[in-house]
Amino acid sequence: MTTVRQRTEKITVDRGIQVSAVIAEPANYSAGEIDVIVLAHGAGADMNHPFMTFFHDALARAGWLSVKFNFPYKELGRKAPDPAPRLEDAFERVLDHVRANLRPGPGRLFAGGKSMGGRIAANVAAKDADAEEKALAGLVFLGYPLHAPKRHDRLRADNLMKITAPMLFVEGTNDPFCRMDLLAEVLKQVKAPTRTHLIEGGNHDFRVPKRLGREAGDIWQEVVEAICRWRGA
Image (cartoon, rainbow, N blue to C red; front, top):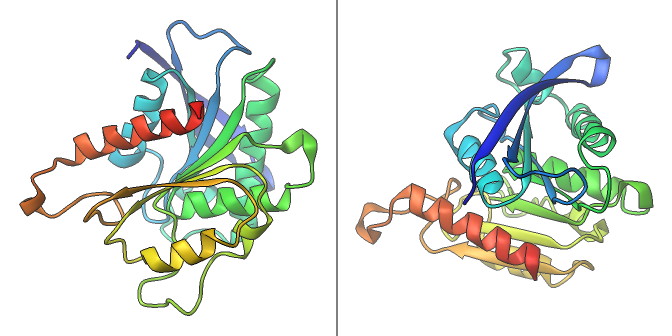
């Protein structure tokens, strides 16, 4: 692990709104020689939620240039998420900002996020699948919301079928938003390379029952290590 520097920037997105983004970079960072990952938050919390803060910081300590940001509704202090097209536009604008300002040279660009943030990343990747200049090196889903709880008949999977970048699905086996058998069936149909990392007994935040004797921080660190192994595969 290495020392990390952080700074905050404002990025202009839809309707001229500026959203906050935090860039965490290893102290020995050299532009163009490092992989970049952009992570979006889930529906119910902003980028400063402990879950997001942990992964943002831990990935930078593991050698990534890590970027997290607020969607417009959270930047404006609202609870209800923006419509999907507006969320997608914000994510695209952040990715464009990263491409233009943070990733000159050969460093690869990854994207993903927690729950809704990961789904929006998938939507963006699916829409831009044929645009070479917007190609992503991979997508990291931290609890992909394959369906709403108890709505197993309505899968959010059409976007996954269009993606060509490799995908890593980190899922708790007791996540009400992602039934394991349904995810397995979906992944049999996608075109892109996929890998899953399962947290036995984990919920949507990868927390497990007390009887399993595992602390959330230890599990989250396991996930960071799984992401890094996947990146190097």
